[in-house]
Length: 157
Image (cartoon, rainbow, N blue to C red; front, side):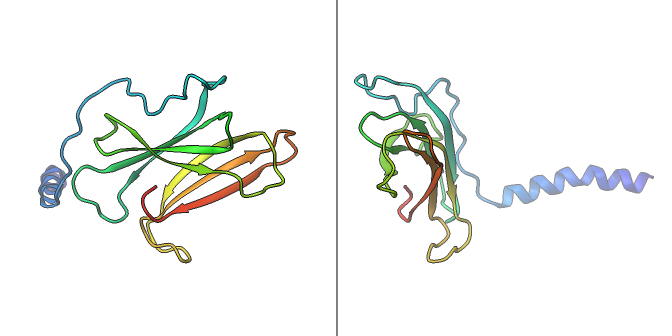
């Protein structure tokens, strides 16, 4: 019984010695209530939903990691998702791109729901690790169908 307890007591020390052998990113600052993105005042509907984010690290980036975020908004000027980026653990954000959801020209009006961001960890078809995938469910104005569209970014968003 005593030998079992000795082993269990040694496990935390082993874990911490292994953890210190690998470089760690700098500590994240503490902050609250950061706005990622805000619809313009001219938009009649300013609500958003289905916020999604991804921490990028499939290319073994060093230092402070990059975060990407998106959410579904009812944009009056078209069907797209706004992609925002943070390079300071989420303390501040900037808009880096829009993903236009017009892959099916027969769809008119409607909304985009359920966005999802994903970073490939291994090759997939012609896409290498680190490729960002964005999917969304485009629902036309007459709510007659759901149309999942998938986009790929090879430049981190």
